[in-house]
Amino acid sequence: MKLYLTPELQAHRRGRFLSSLLRISQSPEHGLPKTGFVLTTGEALQASRESQDESMAWVRQPGCALLLLPPYQEGAIFHSLDWVIELASSSSSAVTPASLPSMLAGELTFNLRGMDGASTEDMPLGELTCHTRYWKAHSNSGLIAATTLPLWSISLLDQAPLVHDFLTNIERHCGLPSVSASESKPEEGNAIRPEDVTVLVCSYGFNVSTAEDLLSKLKTYAVPLLNLANFDLPDSMVRLRNAGLIHDNGLTEQGLAHLMGCKYWGFAESLRNAD
Image 1 (cartoon, one colour):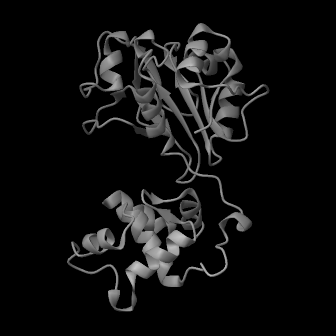
Image 2: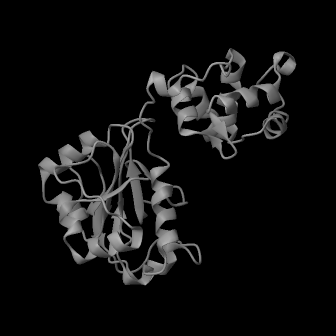
Image 3: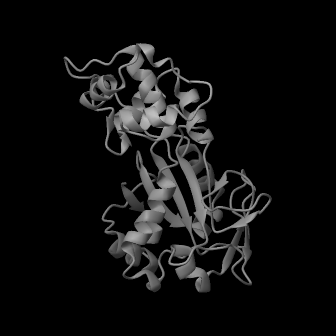
């Protein structure tokens, strides 16, 4: 995760705290970087329609994530989204003990209300208020997110891993830049077969990385998704690993880019969301 602070935030005490906490040494000098995860304040973006338009265009590209932090101005954040900032009288979101939201619950001064995009929280159906929302143009685009959590709080002085986990949870929704043909081409002798692509789809859809786990998952379906008669799952997994498309934690970045570029990406996403 390549983290950046906007120059305005970098120059502020809040930004200097974040730089130290998260070891951020990079700051785009002119505009937004080509790709990366950029942190800025909500009020800075609210003050400029031009910056809003530039940001919304930037996050349509894969690999680009923008997170807005407090402080905010009351009212709409973007002219193109229904996100509204309200002053908070009390914490309105349920939080998990020992979580980042629970640690900062007493410091929240804003509520974020809206329905566009999605919340990073488990919210009751119909609940409009949350601490963090993100929006993306399509499945493989970047994203723009807003949080009311003051990540620059001195309360988090020794909580860098917790803040990193929070940011990583947002970044995982961000689409990945395409891998060039030269980067994604398997080495000689590691060429994958058509059935391996099917295994890759299922590995992503079920979030598994071994033949045993995939087989176990497939057996839970009353109507088989695959005709296993023509498949050698262990061999497929070996070829996918040798080609750099899968590892112990699931698909690699190269594997995900390969899957996104094939005609079965939509099915793979549907399978994962349904699981």
